[in-house]
Length: 256
Image (cartoon, rainbow, N blue to C red; front, side, top):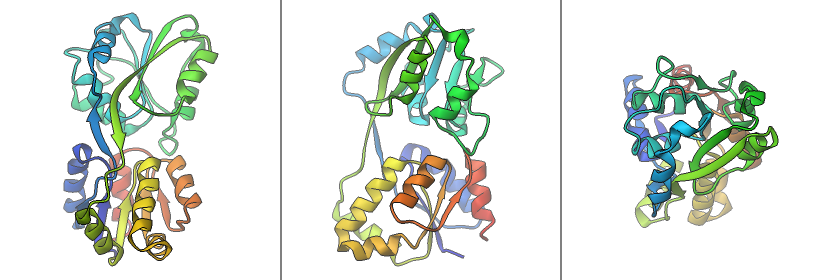
């Protein structure tokens, strides 16, 4: 069995998963591959969030979007439904005290496909025609969800709630990567952007030979899109779990 579980999600969301991994008897290693930070000018975000009761639907593209936005929301307005792309975002809502007991929460029906495409299939798009919809996301991101909602006739607004970036390859991070490449590890990867950043950083260590070693490691991923990215990057040992930490943990436990 691999001797470590590398958790690559942003540090703010990694520690609860790390505790759960440790409870399985595995050794968690925190290696955040995306830095998440508030946007520089939050005035526009706060202004939009002050008017939440004017929307027929508010969609959050990630747990980071949930956390960044709800830090400015004292109470969710009654009767305003929410859409999220996966169980991680649903869990983030719960951390802020918002559950389906309080408001309708729309989510992809199949947890193995937690993405915008499958969220759209779960929405009653006809009901949104001519109505205002807010999409809360990072400073950069796919346009698929806003564009599809507009195509369905919704009046869509987008707002950036956070920014993300691959961390700089410091000497300390380089040492940590070399150490992990020399061990047998399971890597939990919850972002295609993070995975591409990881491969880029590893390539800067010792070139293609380092990447070849990384490609032999086992990846545990929650989304089909991340699995596709991993295969395109040359990884062959990939476990697709579906959305939610409990599925990630079950996949790890099955390797015990």
